[in-house]
Figure 1 (tube, helix red, strand yellow):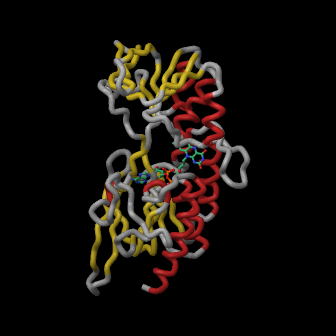
Figure 2 (cartoon, helix red, strand yellow; figure 1 turned 45 degrees about the horizontal axis):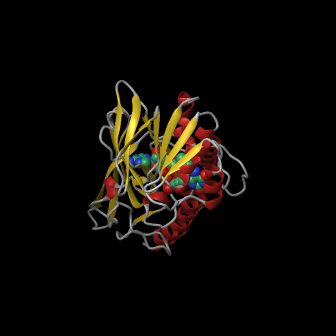
Figure 3 (cartoon, rainbow, N blue to C red; figure 1 turned 90 degrees about the horizontal axis):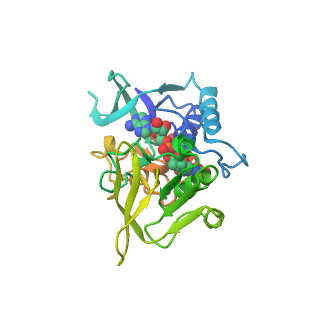
Length: 315
Ligand SMILES: Cc1cc2nc3c(=O)[nH]c(=O)nc-3n(C[C@H](O)[C@H](O)[C@H](O)COP(=O)(O)OP(=O)(O)OC[C@H]3O[C@@H](n4cnc5c(N)ncnc54)[C@H](O)[C@@H]3O)c2cc1C
């Protein structure tokens, strides 16, 4: 029986593992992959202590920090995906949790623990337009860093108004012929500095209050249809559609145990990160915290660990 199982290997999970080891909690870190969502970023400018760090190097440094503590107290189980957590009771009536996992080949393994910290972050929201799924990987993409260079010298579209959309547009403007940014509203959620920089680029066209209704093409994307409220639909030729319209939390495996928001984020007490179920905490992008950033995810996890430590010692 472990004291703690940390699920997820982004900044929140890695931060939690370091603190768990230092507090000598008998723990396991279970993560599909170590690094987290911003691994795809070319240049992260706000990871405190590093004025510039690529997403890949951030992932490497998180893994190195976790590995520094691997062994005595924290076991690392990489390549395992949690698909369920169940609440159990032993012969003496003490409650605990069983965390159920599968690896890439489907082999199952379960782990018993007194407490759980969920730091499973989120995945991209899909473009809700006709044939968007049909053209995924054929022009419709969810990762500018990964797929952008393929569209070098071509006209592309970026969909969204948050940091991820603006960062994608900035990356693509470096080598695409033109970038059309399609935002559903007139407002941007992205940092004003980034918005200003991207909109000032001569090859950027902004279309506001617009919704993409359909993706068109043959083998690959050739155009999109969009509508601006109150106007006639427009067909815009494009080779690529980069979608950055938000995130869906990875919390399905815990939905029977804890309270979630309507969007699936785990509702936590912001003082201590505990969920509605005693013994389960959550940190980072999978929670209902208002702001989602690397530093916040790590900080939330540290807060959770302080509370888990107190709880384990008392219970
Ligand atoms: C393109 C992009 C650029 C960004 N740039 C910045 C930036 O410049 N600065 C900034 O502060 N923030 C940035 N962010 C936001 C930042 O990446 C997130 O806020 C942060 O990664 C959240 O960390 P997390 O640990 O909560 O979750 P994540 O980073 O999402 O990590 C989740 C972890 O859980 C694992 N996992 C998921 N489900 C399971 C499961 N069922 N079983 C086991 N493991 C599982 C994953 O493998 C991963 O290790 C960016 C995000 C994106 C998408």
